[in-house]
Image (cartoon, rainbow over all chains, first blue to last red; front, top):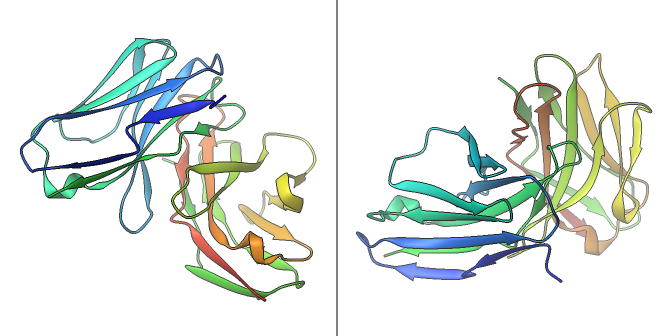
Length: 112
Length: 114
């Protein structure tokens, strides 16, 4: 059983399109996150949800909108995609952040 | 605000030799500290953490790290490197109070030479 699963694994799309990435965790964790890893492998937190409530919202363009229908799911919707959005997006979950995060395998987004 | 520095972009070590990957941190108050490893085209895997207690922390795959409060360091070590240890290693820190946001260093690429 995959603990944190993301779909799709790869996503290639044109500029201006709208796309969504889905994330699900079966660990019973109460907190979920989205991180962006750029081409230099730098990891930056984007959002965090605790029990469906947004608790971290870093400086991210408002074209990015997270949605958490329940504490096991955190989806990321991106409007009007730009070339600079190309990156690997990682979902993660934790139990109160005390024991570190469990990461998904990532979604490689390529905007052309 | 918390931050993490990994001063080396790349570390090369001969197989069988000891390895060290350096990490220093900055955080208000006491930190939680972590090491993660990323293999090519994979997500991050948790290696070890320091929360409290013994300054020497043992983790997965024979890795260990030593918390040094006076030097604000949390270097990753292994007594004898394997070729399969070649990967990208991230040090990370979060605060003990407030939100549990984990801040990652920029990563250090470890090459183990056969």
